[in-house]
Image (cartoon, rainbow, N blue to C red; front, side):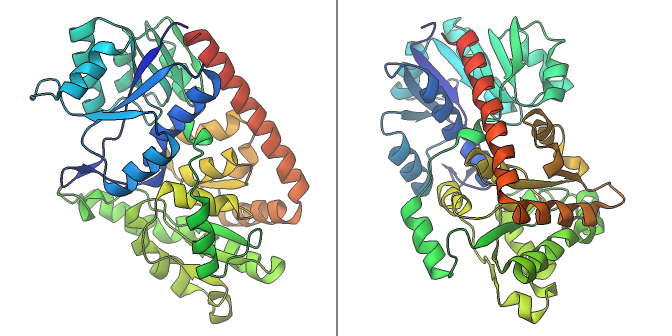
Length: 391
């Protein structure tokens, strides 16, 4: 093995001094990265997670349950670091950027601190890449990119080993089956008898939840497109209820989407359709969400990583993709699910979305075949990347 002690950098969403779950997809990246590496690397390889701050109670419980052998340290090497952080940095023989959108400023700072203190290798696994990220790859031992456009951009870096490795949320497996069963019982959702629909908007209004200035331009764009982007979901819900006698869970991926569930989706449905729907009024953890998604007939919406979780667990996932998705949705093409990627710019966007879900629900075996092929591509890509960079 090239590396026996790997320091994984993630968990950056902090509020009131704790890492919190603001977006279940973002939260799932670190445990997904650990899961995929543990799947293919020997059991004696040690992992430590370097977070921005202590995890809140809910996240700590999820991590302790799934990864009881993984220590989580936190802090900044330049700001009175704890002995645990110093020990983790000094003992590590690789600093690994966890799967995610790219290399955020706090992660880059930690990476530079690690390199300055130890001179040891760094790498990235299952990340996105934009031109602004490109220079950050130059001094890495390897950089595995989660979509083909990111991989193409990264070709211009001086990083010696690079290529495609799937977003690690495909391998997020910390499902809370017990609480998922309780959740479904409470809301009368029988396994295999419901779908999940997720509304979304062009820009995440982080200013509603964090102490950051509101962005008038982004607010205006959200208002301008919210009806267009989400209208297919109401048609999909009506299809699922009337043609397939399914119930529908209308749920959030990000905490700010709770405010969309009723006014944008549920309240505009006919009363007879509303009776078969469960509009969530609160947020949930990624492990609970995964447990529920696994029991559903499909996950459809104006989001990304809930569908990644679903497909990773052999459940259909359709992306209603707007331009602000960036390059990440291109991974659907790489794993053979381009038919389940519906751009909002299409002139027949709404019709295409409904037809796609109709075909998925109407032909479960065809959907299962697509999912098996996607899983094979994901597994083969992970085996290749991990074999080249870690073994």
